[in-house]
Amino acid sequence: VVPTKSLDAADAALRRASMCLLVGPSGVGKSINAYELLLRHIDAGGRGLWVSSHIAEAEASLASAVARALREIHPRLSEGSGHAALGLASTFSPLVIVVDDVCRSKEPLLLLEKVLGWARPLGQGTSSEPSALAASLRVVCPIWNTYWGSIEANYRRQSWIADVRMTGMER
Image (cartoon, rainbow, N blue to C red; front, side, top):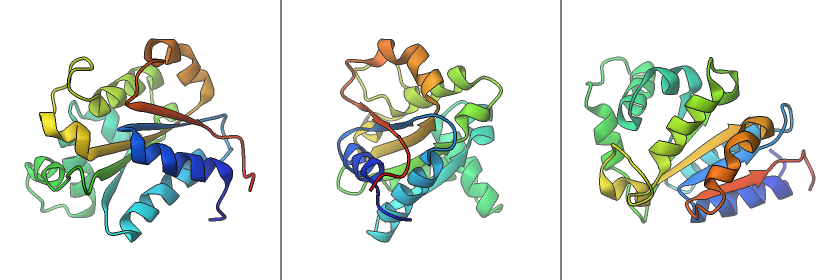
């Protein structure tokens, strides 16, 4: 992947916010940039996982979504594997989770709201995940600008969300 301004901005955003939205129209490279962010994190010794929209849509909690994504790779893992995987994360070594193809789900806005809830730090609304998780988790979600634009005002002042505008492959 050729480094771009958008990728560099997303990389910086991922370091400071628990939720990194890659926002732009279809075809500008949001998913490719999400994949590159995940690879960079793993190559640097971090842990990460790709969660498809069909998994995120079907699972109520982040732990169950992680468990299902892991079981797709290793079918013999136990039901508790999601909690165990989340427990490996720390503030010094955050877990990066990419939730992709939200825009192609049955209900993109509902799924986006669910994913935002998974990344929301304690004290910023409700969350069913353990309290230490928010500080040790980074969620990356490519999203079309039309969907984010319809709810962005509700989240505008949230410091835990970074939205990076993807404009194509500018170096």
